[in-house]
Image (cartoon, helix red, strand yellow):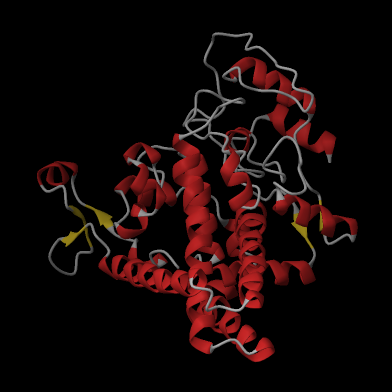
Length: 370
């Protein structure tokens, strides 16, 4: 379910005084009257998709769907999510590793099949999210409430700070990637085919599933995988522990480790956004994305995988952790400093490898451990 198209957010903010007097008037495009903050196209789309998903759930609950169709959609759920987590997220947003062309094409296919917008738009918003976490310049600022950070941000026009700060984010590596820009150009016609058409046709053709049943179960998969991604921006910013940095909102979430293919170590991820594992400890079943990347690294398809050293992590835990950190043996590190210091204060936030504000000691640590 693709969010707001890129060209619909490029607008000139109204004066702040006017905004205070007219809270629903977020922007004017200069071509007509003031436009309201709600994006009705996205609202209607979300409503329709969720109604169709409920219909699909009825087919599943009443056992009208073949078991092969359910198994196929569960598998495709995780692989399409890996396209998001391993592709748009860890590869293109954070530059946490590099990839050979064959696997790059596969990841691009999986991401497009997740139906979560173009790689360009996704990476742009995510870099902005890390650079200005939970401020008005964050597209899904969790300080505006659970629903807004979960999916409400996709139903409203962008905050003026999102637009202005978004222009300062370096996207040169994205715009210079011809495949990424090609995916952006042809996203609208290809995404429905890969996310809905192909997954609907496969069960129908190969094991005789009823076409309508296959379609509605596919909708369930798309909606659930979208909510798994949404939950990282909501649940993982509001509920959980902060073992690595207590000064930021992102938290560790046990549930999201499973349903979001390894994205539940969110406090770690915001503390060390360049780490390809997005976690300190690797569990092959809880962090499926890292398992996927490690598998292909064995065949040389992923390389230059960036990590954070144990020493750097321990120092950070002792300095800014909330006291909940434990290693694999259950050993704790007590917080040894009452001073609240963090590279994630908003003037020092980094979106990942290549951000000009990344500390020299962090760069040296990554290069030493590659």
